[in-house]
Every structure is written in C-alpha cells, then in structure tokens.
Amino acid sequence: MSAVFVWVETVAGAVVPLSQEALGAGAALTAELQVPLVALVFGENAAAVASDLAADEALVCEDETLTGLRLEPCAALLAKLVRERQPHAVLAPGTIRGRELLAFSAADVGASLQTEAGDIVLQSDGTLQVERPVYAGKLTLTASGSSGSAQFLCLRARAFPPAAPRVDADTPVTRVEPVLGKNDIATKIVEVTSSAGEVSLGDAATIVSGGRGMSANPAQPPPDAPDSAIWKAQHGFEHTLTPLAIELGAAIGASRAAVDAGYIDYAHQVGQTGKVVSPDLYIACGISGAIQHQAGMRSSKTIVAINRDPEAPIFRLAHYGLVGDLYEIVPALTAALRARSGAG
Amino acid sequence: MHVVTFTRSTPDTAARLTVDADGCVSQGDAAMVVNPWDEYSLEESIAQAEDQGGTATAVAIGPEVHEEALRQALAMGANAALRIDDPALAGADSIGWATVAAATVRRLDDVDLVIFGKEAVDVGSDQHQIQTARLLGWPFIGAVSRILELETGAGSMRVERSLEHGKQVLTCRLPAVISVLKDINEPRYPSFMGIRRASRASIPVWSLADLEITLPQALTMEMKLEEPPQRLAEAELLPGTPAEQAAALIARLEKEQVL
Ligand SMILES: Cc1cc2nc3c(=O)[nH]c(=O)nc-3n(C[C@H](O)[C@H](O)[C@H](O)COP(=O)(O)OP(=O)(O)OC[C@H]3O[C@@H](n4cnc5c(N)ncnc54)[C@H](O)[C@@H]3O)c2cc1C
Ligand SMILES: Nc1ncnc2c1ncn2[C@@H]1O[C@H](COP(=O)(O)O)[C@@H](O)[C@H]1O
Image 1 (tube, rainbow over the protein chains, first blue to last red):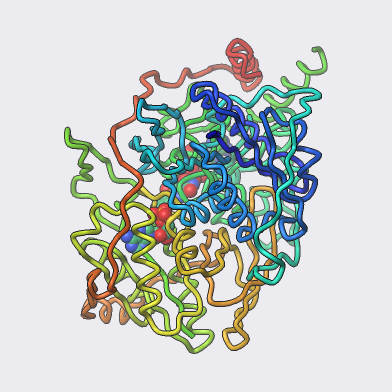
Image 2: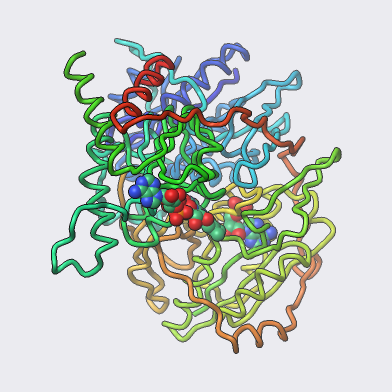
C-alpha cells in the first residue's frame, strides 16, 4: 500500500500555517492517486496536534531528541519511514526546516527533490511535474521526479489552498520510535529565541513594506540622535508603517536599501537576497521597485505602491498606485481603515 | 584549520533574459558575477581562516565561466581555488552534484568546515549544500547568521541560526557544513593587489576521474524553461488628496475582497 506523506512542521508545539497548505496539497494528490494521506509529526506536543490534522493517519514521534526539530534525528526518522512504507510522494512546507529535512533524507533514500514547487501535475507514469520560478522569477522551470523512487516536494509558500480544518478529526495516531540515540547526534540546541508572537513574512496574508523613502520622515530627530536619516526611518517604521500593519494584521517588510542603511533588521528584507513572499496584499511604501526587490514579491496577488515619483518602476508592477508622500498617504490610509473597522 | 566554500558564477541579476526554442537561456551581453549569496560565504570563510591562521579554499563545479567566481574569491583573499570540470557533469542533478562536492571535500586536506551561500540566484534549488553534508556524513546547519565560537582544536563550534519564527543557538561537532545568510557579515571589497594576484593565478582543474568517482543516475528531469505570462495592465493610479486616495484604495480592495 502506497501513500502520500506530509511532514507537518510545528513551532513550539503548534502547527505552522504553511503545514496546512502542505496538507491541502497532499489531499488533492491523494484524491487523484487514491492512496491514504499520512501526516508525520515530530517533536514536542506532536500527538496532541496530530489527532486534529486532516489526514488518514498520523505517524508521531515525541522522543526528546526531536525537540526543536533538529535536522539529523528528524531526517533519519523520515528516511526510515520512507523505506518502510514506500510512499509515492513526500511533501513538506518550503520553510527552512522543511527544505533541510527533505534534502537530507532524499539523499539517504535516493529520492528526487523539487523545491519551491507550485502547481503539481500527476502524469500518467506516476511522476509529479512541478513548476518553480528561477532566475529571480524571470523564468519558470518545469521539472519532474522519476518513477520508481519516492518523489520529495517542498512547496512554495501560499501556492496551495490550506486543508479545511477538521473539528474532532480523531485522526488515528501511530507512535514511531526514533532512529538516532542522544549520543549519535552531532548538534545540540542550546538556546531558542522565539518571535512566534509577530506575524512572520512567509505566512502573512498582508505585508506592508518600507524602503529608502522611509527616511523622508518629517518628524524631527532629538539632538542626541547619532544619524538623523536612520532615526527618521526607524521612527517612520515604528510610528507610521506599524500602525497600518496592525490595522491590517500585516507583517512588516523592507527593501534591501532600507536594511543596508540600518533602518530595519535583515529579517524583514524582501527580495532576491532576502525573503520571497507571496501575500494576498503587498503594500510597497517608498520603494522604487528594483528588479531584485520584485524577485521577492512579484507573485503577490494584489500589489499597491505608494511612491512620490510617478516614474518609479514599482508602478509598472503594481495594481494600484498612490502617487504622493508616504508620510501623508499612509496615515490617511490607517485612519480610514480604523474608521471602517470602527463602523463595521 | 581548513575552510572550504563552494561558489559559482551567475548572470548579473539585472540581466534581461531570453529563452530560445530549445530552452537555452541567453543573457545578451550582461556580465557573469559571483553568485550574490556567496559573497557572504566567501567573506566568512576568509575571515574565519584569517582568524585561526588557517586556509580558505574556494571550489567551483562546472565549466570555465565559473572561474569568474573563483577569481573574485582569490581577489577577496581566499588562499586557493579549484575547479571541477567534466563532460559528465552536464546531466547531473542535485545528488550527482553533491556526490562531486563531497568527493572534493574528502580529497582536500583535513577540512574542518564547509561554508555555502544560501542558494544560486539563477536555477539554484537550495539543496546542494544539504545533500553534500549528508553524503559526507557531516552535520548541517543552515541559515546561520553568526559563528559565535569556532574551536578547531576541540572540534566544535557554536552558531546562531535565523528561522522563520525566531533564532536558535546550536553547538555542533566538527567537521560540519553550514550555509550562511546575508546578515552574517559585510563582504570586503577586493584590494587592488588582490585583484592583480587573482588575475594571474592559475586555477587547477580536476576531473571526475581525478576524484575517482562516477555519478549516480539523475532522478530529476528538467523539462522546460519559459517566460512566465506577463501582466499586461499598468497600475491604476488613484488621484486626489491623501484621504481621497485612501478611500479609493479601500473601495477597490473591498471590491476585490482583499479586505
Ligand atoms: C545582487 C543584488 C541583490 C539585491 N537584493 C535585493 C533584495 O533582496 N531586496 C531589495 O529590495 N533590493 C535588493 N537589491 C537592491 C536593489 O537593486 C535596489 O537598490 C533596492 O531595492 C532599492 O531600495 P529602495 O527601493 O528602498 O530604494 P530606492 O531605489 O532609493 O527608492 C526609494 C524610493 O522611495 C521614494 N520616496 C522617497 N521619499 C518618499 C516619500 N516621502 N514618499 C513616497 N515615496 C518616497 C522614491 O521616489 C524612490 O522611488 C539587490 C541588488 C543587488 C545588486
Ligand atoms: N556548480 C557549482 N559550483 C560551486 N558551487 C555551487 C555550484 N552550484 C551551486 N553552488 C553553491 O551551492 C549553494 C547552494 O546552491 P543551490 O543549491 O544551487 O541553490 C550556493 O552557495 C551556490 O553558489
């Protein structure tokens, strides 16, 4: 009996949203293949979250070596389960951990791996054909695995509809044993800092991004501010963009120029050398729209640009353009949204 | 102490690309540059080697066009460069590639650490580095934002990595493979002397026979490369005072059910 495996990533014991997309993609595939969908959940709290997943079965390992989802024990376990059950395909969210896990164990079991996979097409010989953006999104590559070995896929974020939640799903849970003992593992997690409270760029349905234009803040820096442009931009991210983001439930993004100038942390950088995002709504404020920035946000569903230069390249990509000073438009937008949610 | 980085050349990211009927990509007269993510891995490997009085070696796998990246590495201060080239490489997939990379690392002397960039910005798939580690049987830590301690004598290091939902600090036995992100350092500019030295250096080339390996059968088939459909419409510009612009935008987003 073959199956489709979906690795479900958790952070601090809670399922990350992109895992639901992987389950959604898995459900579509198992319907076509007529095989069961098997969820794999490792680490702390695995059994509790597993029973609520939209899957036919869950394989669960809560051994303490898997806490924090360290790569080596997770990959060894995945490889063992693949060897035992010979699934048709193994899906995982295209997160850092998802990619590492699938690449590591694909090497163990001799499976093909496609990353950033969107649009999975099952072909008559059983191979899975997928598309992914290459050359910074300027081209699309179509590739497939080969039949006769498991096909591993890391999915592009926000490219698949999430699985419908199952209330009282009571998914049958099978406990499995770890493969590696404590002393077989060369790495050790010694400290964890969580930003789980913030909306993360990869999951966000809405992103509000700021660029070099953030330094045009009319607010006056205090006399002791070491650099007035940095102070103005940081103040703008905090007091102008953040209120809009809160109103929209959005994550904060940034251009590389803003990051390199020290306005905001690299974790927020969108683009070729930052994060690739694909929210429903992307609002670019004071960003010119260089090709390398576009590489990170081009696939957003609706793009809004706020820029005082009507010639900025971002207006050739955006759906809606608001030409003007972001420090006037963003507060007006925040106020209008607030009035709307107050009235609604 | 010996640090190895793998790097290659990629088209200048602003290059306009065209694809012909055979799926061959052409970038016109745009330059090849060192893969942008590798500026950080090169810098880190050179800085760590300098720190420890060790050696930094840069390796490219593939045709001569990748010498561009190796000369950049030498100009920045890498101690040695090496290219692996072989006609058989043309059909390799990522496991094939990792087989070559792992064999190269084994062939080099006493490697403590292999540092990769995050991915190749052209057709990279962000898996080569991970599979190289696996084939070496070494631990892998990706998305490293800081090397906090590197003790080659004791055979251990401590690093910080940045995940989607926070940071982790890990300790790790050496030898190991890591990949680094942009926030790990500020890459240096090559010095004039460095560039001169690099342009004169002769870079050895090894074949698969030199490595005494053959490639495993490729499991991934690349089928076609094409330009995605272009969006035709220009942005709809929303005029008026900021308040009017805001109201017009909200109306449109409501209609599209984005809000
Ligand atoms: C290899 C490589 C990789 C790169 N990777 C990335 C990447 O990952 N992400 C990325 O973003 N960039 C990347 N870049 C950099 C990219 O080329 C651009 O330099 C960068 O995106 C520009 O950022 P920006 O739009 O914020 O700044 P600018 O291009 O300076 O644009 C600022 C904009 O703000 C507008 N503005 C100013 N004041 C106001 C105001 N008060 N109100 C409204 N608008 C205002 C201006 O009209 C202008 O259009 C990369 C470059 C290279 C070479
Ligand atoms: N042919 C190659 N030679 C040397 N390094 C490479 C090669 N291909 C990829 N790399 C490096 O491996 C890392 C991951 O690349 P990729 O898996 O292709 O996205 C990047 O740092 C690349 O520069």
